Image (cartoon, rainbow, N blue to C red; front, side):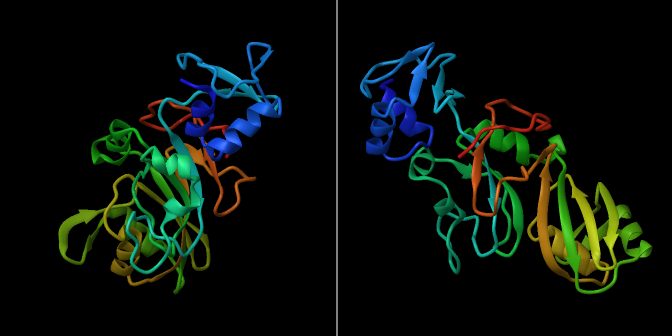
Length: 239
């Protein structure tokens, strides 16, 4: 694959910007400065050095976004901008999709990939991948609500009880809730079922992944191209 195409596919900007990156002397391979954007390189086990940092080639994309409020997890949003607009065009053109969804007023960790097998692996209830939510409630929370959430509650229009895998009180009106399945508006409906109401909702973990301290709302980063299913190796990419 041509060097400029490799850089473009990895999200380093437009084709013109990728060529400029090469011409600036920022791209190296095996101790050699690469100065031709049209140079063909094998992508198998390819590791470039870009601005002094190693960059393994990602044949398939897996990225984390720190989702802010006011964005819909949809390609065709109805009332708010799409979260896809927070990713660079090269990633969108690769066809990445969000792994699960967060409501427009929910913040936190959102994963994207163009790997259909990985999407199935991480969203299938069979794999029980835990997702942790920090919940701000309208009313005070107590031990009885925690007990009911752990035991299982019946949601409106859904006769099958759903339960939290873990639940703890983190403040007078705050909970940390861990779920291993994903239903429509599940956290909000579960809190409503115990007589409370969600005022703020933030997903802090997906598997063992958490949002890096330096990843601000609206920013994204690459993750390694492994297949979890437990997502137990935090990523160190940047974007």
